[in-house]
Image (cartoon, rainbow, N blue to C red; front, side, top):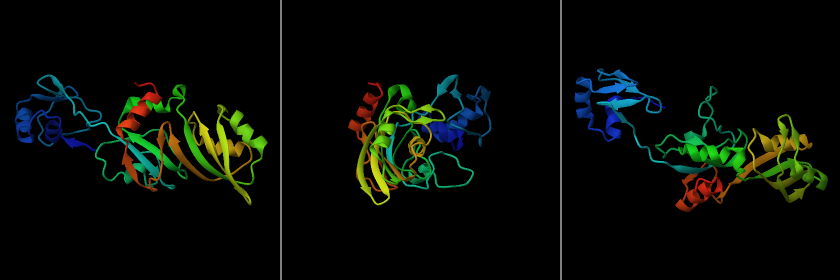
Length: 242
């Protein structure tokens, strides 16, 4: 997180004004990580550093936000990238809070991505024990026969074990391609692509269209919106938070 001047942090926390904060600093009333701070230009990392004023802990109560993004392809889900590629958070131009992706979509994959600063919800949504369903639209090269479809439903052997049962429904077939929907309840790295590779089909496009009770709907590629109260409640119910 970006470092912040101590005076500004105290003002955001509602402790005092920035000017009055300077008086506290001069008086030696403020400690950061147990050390008295007397430097006016001192900067801290609000996500890591512990601040006390006259022995009382200070913390900024950040607003909890829930963002649904239609992730485009060629955008990464991680928050840091040595290759300087576009990150999903770069698309959230109007979001002031520091949010984190819930799970990942790989570089080529597009579709529904949830971002939030609600750590407990994010943990539960991605933990395999809660079995939150995720649905993808997949296009592969070739015409997929019924036996192969059943293999995907029953479970496919990957290097990290057999996949859990999935729901598969063919939507369209044409010359040299099959388009189908698949719903899974686990979230291994590049799982859909690896499952298709394992049964001999190469994925040419992949889009996540739902995550638990959330639906992508008609949200444009690269656009985002806040969740409704009803969607937040439904998400929490899906992972037994309420």
